[in-house]
Length: 508
Image (tube, rainbow, N blue to C red; front, top):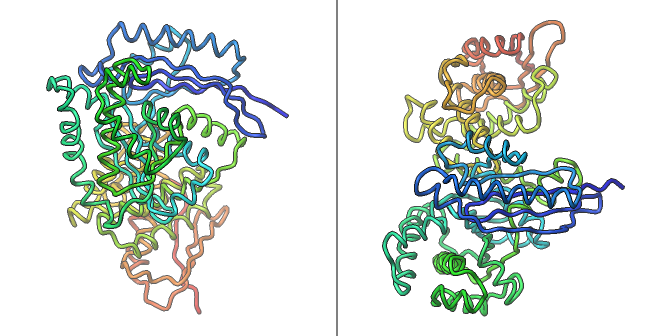
């Protein structure tokens, strides 16, 4: 049985972590964990750059990690950087410096990708995860630069929002305010309340959130040490004790560095505020890290691990909730989604795209007219702006930009590649995917031009060697409008695929 030794490296805002794993058909076994405190985030959030001294320290630590990897005969690794590197103004130069000095290539995770990996690791680690999210549940993922709140109802991801309330940002604000120990609880609560006011009105149901699952670097370890993963009444009392204790006393009592104790207290105050706001009594701290998410993703890709939860459905659920928020017609969106996926599946041999691109097409179909919420004239531009400024958990920045451009160009003349410029993730390969998916969605929209869902059934047949695609529709209604106005959409489709779509009405 093939066994692979794998290293997962997390270049975080205030810590550099690495876990060594053994991956086989039997599953994943953790062999070792190494963690070093290194405050990269404070530099980034204050100045937009990481100091030369911190870069040097980071490179020296990565060289040590490389030696450890060699001692375990690691055959593959993945290293991810999060907000501290992502938000620098010279990210590309910084990553190249690290690569040249250490031989370790760091990839940048978008916020939604990072939180999705944390979420995946929770789903794998908690044995009763499906039972927990079947009830009202919040996942609170606390980082140095921001926190992510994801809400589940009836086993489905209802919404997820990122708030710039990371504990390093809060700490910097408190230091700037020269806050005393006794002032900190009220100040943290005020900062949290300011960020959460709109979120509470938009997303929190009137009923209470039953469970909260937390992911963090300070509080989780203490909770597990004291009580295990959760203990509702006693844990609540424990949290309030931590929140009312100063950093110096916390550092002595729990043998923490004073900086770590300060961040522990901030984390506890944020968790308590949210528990009180949501009426939550059940707190779970599974003790996952980004490194766990990295190895689970890697094992999935290598087909060494079968998923226990439908993560793709969570992405789709997020898209549907976004569509609902902007009052799109669910019936119309479902019709467009169905038509687009039928065309996509029938053309597999012609477009050569993957299951992932099919998912992006599906999301674009769901969100295609969300811009009508703000304008009935500039629908494409408004839809683009909504998608670009809304996180869809599980999608990278590039994928979100791809979806945003699809929903834009089903309304506007399709732009040449030269129009995209350098301030975009749309490279030549992505532009090709964009053109293929936009052509399919445009054609799909033309087939429901009247928005009356006229077709009882639809079949797509690609005629090999005849340079045309037959769209066979079964309907009792007049489809003169659809036949007459398909031309403009068919032009782009023919340009991209070199085949002409033709509608045929099938007699009952």
